[in-house]
Structure formats: C-alpha cells, structure tokens
Image (cartoon, rainbow over all chains, first blue to last red):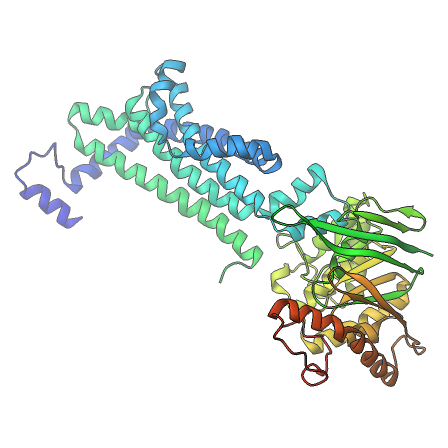
Length: 237
Length: 280
C-alpha cells in the first residue's frame, strides 16, 4: 500500500489515471456512505443471488435427468460439455436481442454462466455414488424418488457443494461482464461510469469491493460448508 | 422347506456381449431358523448366489422360493449384510439403523427406541450419535448387523461380513452372531471363503465348485448345546471340506497362472484360517 501510494505520487501519470491509496479509500468510503456504491452492491448481489439460484436448481434438475436417463446423457450430456466451454459473456449479444438491453439480459447471462458447470458436477456426483449404497438401499426396500432423496442426493453433497462453488465463481464473473456492457446499474455499471468520467479512484474502489465480496462468499460460505461436510464424513485429513 | 432353490442359474454379459455362466443348476433348501454357510473358492459365484436370493439380481434360469413365494425383487424380509459395511457416511449411527424402519413407515419414536435397543444388543449404545467414520471396522460391521436385525428379517443374508476384520474382532463377532441367532431364531445364510468360520458357525455347510458355480457337496454339522461346534468335529470337517476344495483351487490357479503351475498338496495352504488362498 505504501509502495502504491509512493508510486502514485512520484509517477508522471496524472492523478486521475493512477490515484493513490488515500484517494481511493476516500472515494470508497464516501461512495459507501453516500449510497452510490452500496446501492450498486445490493443490485449486483441481488441479481447474482437470483441467477445463481435459478442456475443451481436448473443444474440439479438437468444433472438428475442426465444421470437417470441414458438417452439424455448421450444427447444433452454431450451438448452441455460443449456449452460449458463457451464463456458466458458470449451469450450477451443473443440475450440483448431476445430480452432487450436490461435486467433480463444480464440475469440470463449470469444464469447460463453457472448452469452448465452445475449440471456437469451434479451428473458426475450422482453417477459416482457407490453401487454398494444402492444395493443397501434396495435391500431395505427403497426405490424411486425415495432412493434419490435419501441416498443419491446426500451421497453427492460434497460434489454438489464444489459444483456450487464453481457455479458461484462463474456467475460472479458473468455478472460483472454483463453489467459492464449492459445497462441497469450494479457494480459493473459503476465501473463503466468511472471509466467514462475518468475517475480511476472509483474504478479501483469498485474493484476492491468486487474482490472483497468474492473472497467473503468463498471463504465464509463455501469453505465453511465444505469443512462441515468433510468433518461429518470423515474426509478431512 | 422354507427357502428353496430349484435349478437356479445365472449368466452375465461380458464386455464383448457374450454371456458368461457364473452359476449353474443350483438346488438346495434351507429350513426356517437354520444357520447355513456357503464356501467356495473366489470367483465361484457365491456372492452372486446371495444377491439372487435377496432379489438384488435376477435369476436367468430356475426359481427361488421363500415360504412358498417366488422371489422377484428385493424385500425387507431378506436383508443383506455386505462385506464392506455399506453404512451411509452422511448419517449418524442411529439414523443408519432407523433407515429401514422409517421406510417400513414405523413411527419415528418407535423406530428410534427399537434402534437403540438393537444397538445395545451389539454393544454400541454409546455411539448412537457418532458418524460411521468415527468407528472402527468391527464397530461399523456391528452397526450394519444391527441395521439388518432391527428390521426383524426372516432371512439374514451375510456376504463375507467379517472378511475385512482382524482375527480378534472376528472371533468376538462370531460369538455375538451365534448369540443373536439363538435369541432371534432368524434364518442365516452366510457366505465366506473361510472354511473354519463356516464350520464353527453353521449347522450346514454348502461347498461350491467353480466356473461355472455348482453345488459340490453339503455337510451337516452336529453342534453342541451352546451352538458352537466342538473343536474335534470342526477340525475333522475342515479337513474334509478342504480336500473337497483342493481340486477347485487347482482349477482356479491353473486358469490364473497358466498350466505350468504345479499344485502342491498340503504344504503351503495349511494355515490356521484355511482361507483357501483367497489372498493370492
């Protein structure tokens, strides 16, 4: 931070292009208190949660069908792998044409960015449930949906969690890209505003916020969930 | 007769889609409350036979009947205890044991009480809230026996349940299993590759030959009052069964190692467990 501040003061580039630490922190706090940044945070996180929720549900369902029906696996399963390799922002032009430049287009990009990963991890989680559990459940008379609910889903929880973690990272990136290009507020949009106004201090503040939110969610939510499951299952070393 | 197998055969499809016969023309019957062991060299299809009886696998030929009814699929009246405990790692010991009871639509409270009582029988009442990974191999196997017995099955099908345990644990569990069997009078079908285990525990030993699996011989054991086979009888029988199986073992080894293998009679395999070289 000291190096940053010194470098900023000594560098020949003007302040608005390479702001120092103090200036950035000032913008960050005024932004948080005035509500400019805070509002953007709520908007972005709100979108993310909706998109992530839809993606997770969709991914679980698709994953289930891929696991359950061989035909779906052979067709959709293959397609999903191909779809997953498309960076989600590539969908934006299509989304803009379909839904117009607004909320829906961004939500669409966020959702589609996470759905395929979630589908793949869910399907592989379901497929990797040991045959032994299936046999045990069947001798006790379980089958059908009861079997899925009491064996298949709990047995794939570790994989589902790591899938959700990945899905979260993908949708977070997709969201920023979408907001940067699309309209309708949010952190990504604030970046764009900062750029057009030549306020690099604002841009860097938003970047800090983005990094913070990403880290907090990963460390607090997913790492904890992961650890709890690992401990319960006795997987932790 | 309680459990009847009539001309049972089973084939699997291998990688090249050709059927492979694993079991052929199996005929036997078991009385209610009997403790019967099945021994045979590895790969003779004894576990498959158990799965057929449980209904987990379907017969290709013949018919299996329990109490006069044809077996068509799994039924909680016939519970399998597997070699690996098969406990659900995400559930506590108690939840594992109540799993089948709740499936039978038993009220929660009643299921819990029954499970705790059964866990007491296997001396694990201290561990009801533990997760499977916190238990030792022997304890896990105890839980899976409790999980099976709590269902009050008519037939308990055990697929080498003690094979992965150390000798001391196995001996303790043998005694406990005999106690449980005497108390509950459940019919037990016990698959093992350990001849001594088969002879000590059961009233009847079925010896199988291999490739395809067929019945080779049946031995009836005269047990003493306490349900344990007296040592001299056990030793004698062990020898008899072992000599029955020598031919089979040679067949397996020749197939696996090639024709240059010379089977050495009574020199290497006379170990105390009589486990027919299953570890080879």
